[in-house]
Length: 517
Image (cartoon, rainbow, N blue to C red; front, side):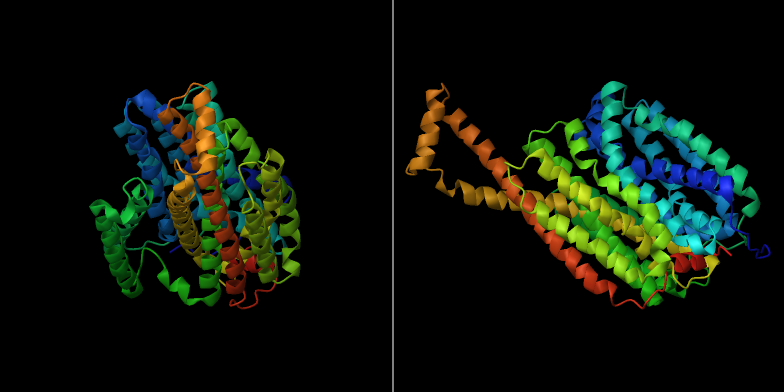
């Protein structure tokens, strides 16, 4: 085992450039989780497959990434933080090139699996390396820099992906990673290679790793394909659910008794870690569900193009970028539970504002909640991450960060799946209620059909137009239902936060975790 060592924080230009390098790598990674979403039709058409088959481009990355993230702690102890992070970026660049050059769907899925696997350690390690690079008093600012990229990238992904697919071609959604990644890797190694963390040779927990791969892969595929296969009405989904549940149970028992576990489950014995992870993950799941649902509703039922839907949701980043540094610099002065409660309160208010949306809502009233939500985003990651990592020794931070990010990413997948399924189910309910009055005996319905018939439409065409109009209303009412539920759950999360023990200043808690002395 290498001798433990403590590195002094970076200063001046070195600190600025290290922040740029680590943030760029994080941004590139998180961007890749959503950038492909809007490009699926282009990819499917170009490779000669159906859009449903094309969605495996998203699923394959998500499954591989979810497996790799919790392995960060073990890999870090074996190879060192800086070496692992730089290698991950370079392999991510290689995988991106291979994805762009793929000539068949099978090749593209194989390279997306590789991309997801090597991307796993990047997010937790960028967090750990940032914390160790900043002075102890600026730990909150380090987390703020990290949070900005993690929250803005999912919003930017669909906008950038749509523009690249429309104006260039779909391979460019992968090729843009090449210059960004090479620059980030070179900068990281140049600045940080002399600040390597201690390493030790650990035996590989092969049983734990195999169980992790089985249950996480089953869960992710179930979440990605559930809606398409009608959830538990499908034998395939039931089988995946059983495999995920049984696999997780065996994994839990094995990891708790293994001397050198692949994932440090015992971190959940710390109350602040448990409550911080639950609040962070559920909050992120709700946030991500709204990020997925808003553009779908705007494009499918409000007549927005992909570009305009992107522009309507983009203001979410304005206050997040402006406020994050301010929050980071001052968070050490207050109890982080107050800051996180403020964040959830704003998320709740924004959700209740959206619950009032109708088919007549103009663009300004759609943009306004997005703009306000930026304040919630700026005060979301920093306090909850500080709470999660508070009191941990530096050697446990990569494992804790990896585990916390794994749970957060999985909750994001849950949020996306559950929200779209609930949206369609509630829309079917509202559609049934709204069509109750469309009969030959209802004067208003009869008048509407007669007006459409007078325009030269047949009876079936007139009923088709009315059905489309009812669909728009039904899906809008359903979206409002989901926004109302989101607001209510954010209020519940405020209560959960106060079960945690006071965690002094977020900055010092974070810095203690990062080991910046």
